[in-house]
Length: 408
Image (cartoon, rainbow, N blue to C red; front, side):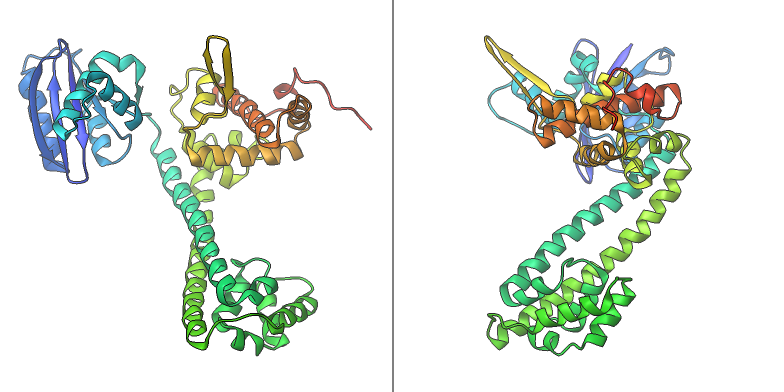
């Protein structure tokens, strides 16, 4: 016997519907998020199954998320949880009705019917280890702060361009510690022009810069160079903004550094860490990101092709009649593909096999990004094989079928 549940979740409640194998609605309700809600759901399931339920009874839940305490509670209860991609759910909704009508209760019904008829097409929630989940939490927080640092740096750049363009000429890296220190101390043209070489040099020394005297002289000259400005009142307002942005960037940078240490500590405890970082182009941080986004459930990817498809490094083909187009996958995990492309860019420098494969793609007419994606696709397959066999990367084995680069 199988019982199907559609769970349309919101922040504080869930609309659920229970359905039998024939598609008949057995019960529906709106239940609260949390312990009380999960208890009510268990009660609803128990009422439908009865006390004499067979041991092989399966409860299948369709829900548009794969994480959180609620999903964890469903898995702990022994339910089969299928994470439905919201885009897939939307397309299924259109298949059932073209009117465009939508409600939470109707979505719960749709999800229940979807897992009843199309469970074989859906991906179950991965059974990743607690350690892999912990690595994902810290590495995602680390990457999010890096993105935030980039956004705040761009805001700082725009502000300086509007009222203090000399600062852009003086400072090469706006998010560097010495730059942030000097901007916090002198956020406007007048105060920056008063900075002495010794003050600038001290900031450079604290940031461990080289050629301090020459750089201090160059920065001072740039800050004192004539430039177009804004009225005093506007300049003062911009100066307040710059000081605030510099403070935020300094705080973000400190937390990025702190989280990097946490990432390395968590990642170092994982049994697959040595295999991951043995891959060319992967260090502790990028390796942790790759491991976390792929997960460590050994049954999640049936083969290397499945892992490549999930990574979105493998191309997709659109064919109709005489027309055939091969393109990169548009829908993907941004964090994972970002890490894999970074790995590929480093691998073509340190791995002769990866470099030869990259050169082969370029010789065929592929552009830089396309060739790099092909390298990333090949590296994903190599990683899959290493994880499956529990062996570290070997350059000769990995690229055995590739032509050897010419020796000089």
